Amino acid sequence: MSVNLQGRQTWLFNPAPLLLGTGSVVGKREGDGPLSSDFDVIHKDPYLGQKSFEMAEQKFIEEACNLAVRWANVGRDEINLHFSGDLQNQITSSSFTARSLGIPYFGLFGACSTSVESMQLAALAAASGGARLALASSGSHTNAVEKQFRYPNEYGSQKNETTQITVTGAGAAVIAAPDFLPAPPPDQIRITSATVGRIVDLNVTDPFNMGAAMAPAACDTLLAHFKERGVRPDYYDLILTGDLGRVGSNLLVDLLTNAGTFIPQKQLNDAGKMIFSDEPKNLAGGSGCGCMAVTACGHIRREIARGKLKKVLLVATGALLSPLTTQQQESIPGIAHAISWEVF
Picture 1: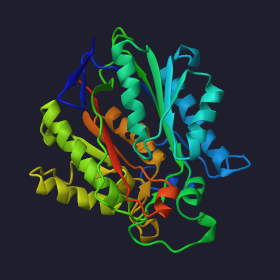
Picture 2: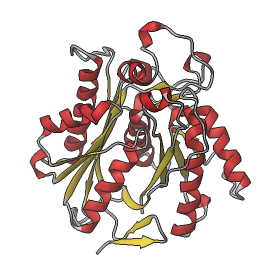
Picture 3: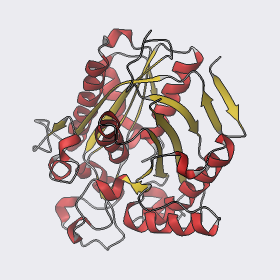
Picture 4: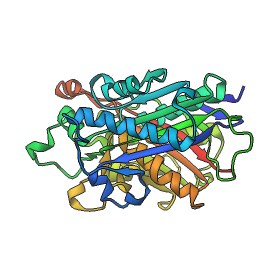
């Protein structure tokens, strides 16, 4: 058995499952941003030739999955399980993608934390003998998501500086059992641990300030991870949250400092801050299921391949609200899930 429970909410994988292949597909705005050279595919057409933005979102996820399978150099029929989720009602983009792929499927909803949640479960399955190969994916589309949770982009409604912009894109990863490769290459990424987050709700009710709603959950998960895995923050070359944006990231630093944990700025970053250029038009940064997914499966994977990073902790955050709960003035529960990628 290669899964050990540490404390209450952390899994240690030893031997660790392998990150065999990834795929990242983004839209035009993301492709114009600072990470553009690290995405596999950039689409200029937000419709991808489809009749609706919702159908286009499915195509983003489907393409990312197929890319990950191709990079893993395996057949789609060899994959035992597919874990996926998105922000559409009833996670239809992921489910319709699963319909196309034909892989046994678990549909997930963790809001923007789904990218890491799907990888955690895929790694657990691969490490425990539940799957030889597992696929994890998530995605979002700004024109589909914004009209569901806030206002259609076509309205041109004014947004305040705490608002984050939903990323158009999808990321996917193929995760293999520890012994899938008899002799893994020196730069092989391994998934060494995962910390499952708790719901944290500090009574934030503003759907235009999701960074503030999610930051407390990120703090809670990070503190649990450091304690239960028995490592200090400087164990990692990079701790990447996603997606708190600029507002939530600043709040996270304050929360960690108040809890007695200081992480240097060069070691702590956020996918929502990285994906778009730092211009007023991009407000507080990016968000959405696709934000961490494309940043991790595109940029971070390549930074590890370049030798610039060896140990990365990905902490994906989610605001677990719905349009109905917002209308009813409910507070926004936050969640954060963490997973570590390492090269030995």
